[in-house]
Image (tube, rainbow, N blue to C red; front, side):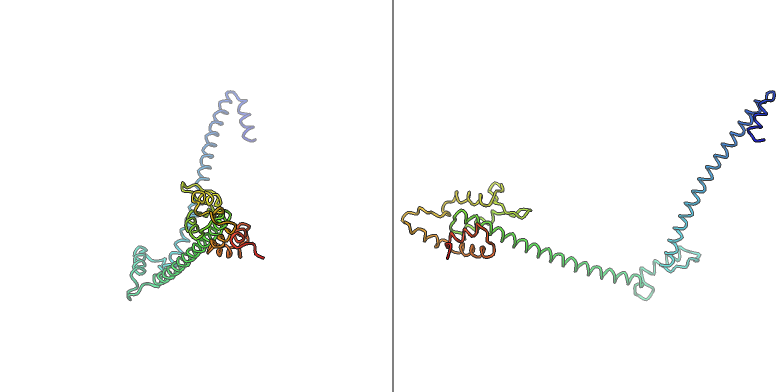
Amino acid sequence: MNLEELLKALGLLPEGQKFVEAIKTILAVKDGEVAKKSNQYKTLTQTLKETEDKLKTVTGHLTKFYDHTGIDDTAEDLDAALEEYIKGITSGKGDGKPAPEIAQLQKDLAKLQRELKKSIEAQTAAEKKAEEETAKRQTSEKNRVLLAALTENKAIKPDQLLKILSDRLKVTDDDSVVFVKEDGEEIKVQDGVKSYLDANPEFMQNYQNPGGGSGGGSSTGGQAGSFGKELAKQVSTQQTQSLQKGREFYFGKGE
């Protein structure tokens, strides 16, 4: 007879139901206590496992510590042994020389400092060279664009214009060249040069020069000077349409 059958039989007796309820109450209390103790056991088991894991970790650290420092793990006074170890690595071992560990650390540090210094110097030199190369490239590009714009606008006195207008040109982040107006506005180089020449007509080739007659064209060659030579050099390496026009303008189309 199991518990369920026993309770059913007790319930058939006179006032047997009272016994049944009493037994159920007792069993419920016992079940609650068992469940509580079971939960406590689970918690205790988990805590014990975590403690064991921590103990393993600490033991591993202690083992590494003893191996590294050379302190005897059976030393009765660990504090005294540790103090002696610290004294040894900070003030040597009584012979006026630093402990081997400290000496090695000093060598390693000195080596790292030398390598760091060399790396910094190499990086600085590389950055300086890169800046110089960038400046040269940008200057060359600005001169090329400016010469092309001066040619298209048939400017004269090129030496003066190159000096005057070169500072008005700017190389942008995408390596394009723009003309910076006095108010800071950035426009196309051709437009900027034209605007400047319109405001300063003394730099414009005057085809209606009084007394020049049909031979006035000969003065054009005289005005070429270093500007024309510079154009010739530029065209020899960069055959752009604008520069080609400039060479033809100052020297003719040739044979």
